[in-house]
Image (tube, rainbow, N blue to C red):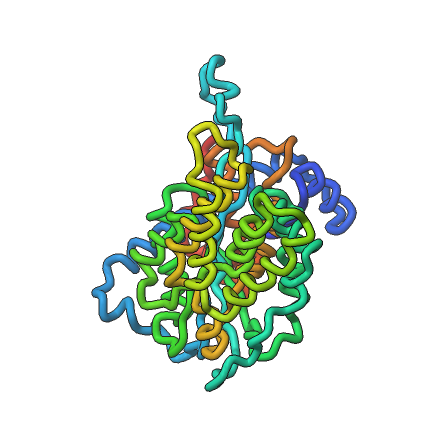
Length: 389
């Protein structure tokens, strides 16, 4: 019964909805408060297991960390990382701190670990930019939405990936595991590395990490996944290129310039885009301190800086030859699934509750079903004493 209660609490849109679900599907009446307490308690037990697994992984010698603990090794291992949003409000805050100036929204850290299958090729299996990225109206909408954390941005990115479904050489997913948590980036990186090691990723012949341009993502790559091929999400890159192509230009000139630049990025020739952006910056001049973020000078300068910093992670033609994914649509889709449970203007969590729910949400999305093992082994750890509250 506890297993059913926790499942309802972790997967329903709210604890009140979980109460109604249990009434209809399990024909039992359990109050929303009891569901909440049980869900958070089990979530915290899973968090404790997760922390113990990380501690054991850290104690392994480096050669052991680079080996698989079992014989089932994927031919292609892919890690994708990104962040979602959640509202955090602690009960013990002072009255003056109930609504901090930065608001209640905080970042969640999410990773999806994918076992994939693909073939390698001596030549680029898809040298031409897909129509989904050449469509100006579509890119205008995508570039507006991708800057925020809205569900619309994730849905649009998912659609962009679906539009490439027939792209030759695109890898196929065999299995997915998910990590989601609050906390520091270093702790998150260690947890993702532990899960990757448990999944046999360390011994995979081809490995890649895909993320957007946030510095924290590439700090995690450097500290824990430096033996993986680093790939900048193509969607983020091409949105920057679109904004720079449209900055300060009439609409009838944007299409030809953008499509030329996007094709160069798709072909791994980012240096050519950088050269033309440098020329464009000379025409506009450097940005002034009072320029808005949307001013053409600021947009061009920001895109130029972004491409220069990420250039080594934008060899997209080589990645396609190696059969690697080049977009982070899979992690965007995963974040959208987690947000259905934890994100909402009316949903506020404590750090304690947020960590527990994120852990359970990730467990339910993972194909290796870690909760099945947890429920089998949980009775072995009981002392026989009732929990005192």
